[in-house]
Amino acid sequence: AATTAAEKGKKRYPGEAKGFVEEMRFVAMKLHTKDQAKEGEKEPQGQPLARWEPSVEGYLRFLVDSKLVYDTLERIVDKAAFPEYFGTTDFSYTYAMLWLFVLDAEFKNTGLERSERLAKDLEWFKEQGHAIPEPSSPGITYAQYVEELSEKDPPAFICHFYNTYFAHSAGGRMIGRKVAEKILNGKELEFYKWEGELSQLLQNVRDKLNRVAENWSREEKDHCLEETEKSFKFSGEILRLVLS
Ligand code: HEM
Image (cartoon, rainbow, N blue to C red; front, side, top):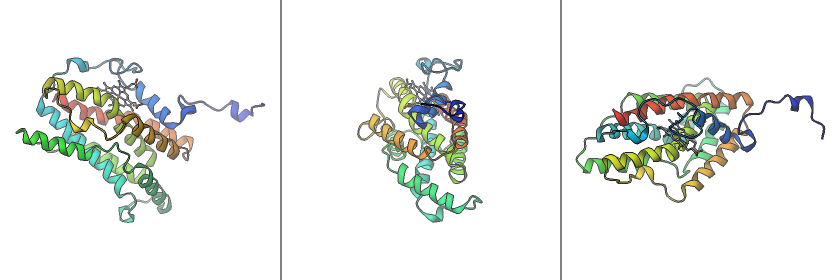
C-alpha cells in the first residue's frame, strides 16, 4: 500500500508498537546502571547491591519514607472521585474532572497498593523493639512533588505512578531479598508480597496505563517520558536511606 509522506516522515518511538508502557519501560531501563540491569546504560556508582551493608535503622528509614510516598499515591487515586479534591488550580475544571474520574476508575484497587502492607511491616519492627523514625527529607520531598503533579500534570503523575509500582516489583524485590538475608534472618516482609499473581496484576495495570495514554498527544507522551529521570532521582534518594 502507498504510504503518505506524513506516515513516512513519522518518527518511531522505541516500544511504541507495543503500547505506551513499553515506551516508559524503555526509558526507565536505560537509566539503570549496567550492574543493576542488563539493559542499563549508566556507569555503576557506589557499591553493587551484592556488597551492600545495610543496617536495620537505615532500612527502617527507607521503609518509612517509601510508605509516605505510597500513602500519598494511594490517597490521590482513592480520593480522585470526590469533587472536594479540587484545590486551587487554574486548569480547566472539566479537564481536571475527567482526569480524576479516569484515575479513580482505572487505578484504584489494582492490587499493587503497598501502604497497608508497609504499615504491618512497621508494626512488626515495633514489636521487635525497634523505634520507628519519622519520615525524612527524601520521602517528604517526593510525596509533596507527586501531590503537586496529581493536580496539575496528569502525564507526569502517571510516570511516577508507573515507575514507583513497577520498580518495586522488579529491582525493589531483589533489594528486599538481599537486605532480608543480611539483617532480618531472611524474613520476608509484607512489602514484598502481593495477593494473587503479581505478573497478572502488573499486566492489568499495563493495560490500563496503555488505554489512558492512548488519549494523549505525542507532546503529552514525551512529557511523561521526560519525567522518568526525576522519578529515578527521587526514588534513588529514598533508596539510599537503606545505607544511611
Ligand atoms: C526493572 C533492577 C532501581 C524502575 C528492573 C529490572 C531489574 C532492576 C533487574 C528487571 C529488568 C528486566 O525485566 O529484565 C534495579 C536495581 C535498582 C533499580 C538493582 C537499584 C538498586 C530502579 C529505580 C527505578 C526503577 C530507582 C525508578 C524509579 C524500573 C522499571 C522497571 C525496572 C520501571 C521495569 C519493570 C517492568 O517492566 O515490569 N530494575 N532497579 N528501577 N526498574 Fe529497576
